[in-house]
Image (cartoon, rainbow, N blue to C red; front, side, top):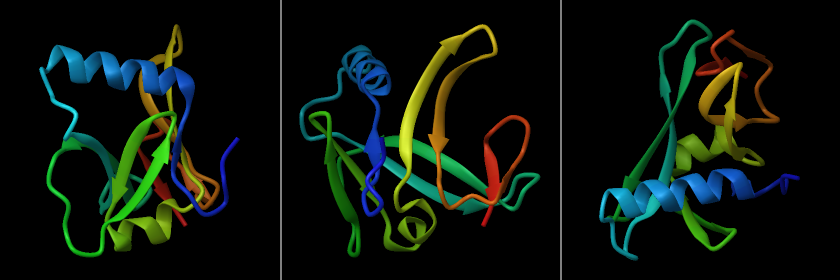
Amino acid sequence: MTDTGNITISEKATIKVKELMKEGNLGNDYFVRVSVKGGGCSGLTYNMDFDNERKDGDQVFESNGLNIVCDLKSFLYLAGTELDYSDGLNGKGFNFINPNATRSCGCGESFAV
């Protein structure tokens, strides 16, 4: 369940993120950075990466023991979003459950507001 003002991460996604961080030998100073960029078939695309440097204006959230960081401009599009992970037959990977998206493409990687 998402909090309307925060960016959260599901338990399943938390497990996968911690696994990837361990595989990449990333220390405790790393966090998950999420953002939005222009592009994709619906106009905006999601981006997720690991980072260890905060920037001016970053919004910081804690969910399931992980820090999630987002720049202020992206947060305007991602407020209330939950980062989830699927390993099912219909697709494997991270996905953004974004209550602000009015439309998204079939692959789930781009959206419009």
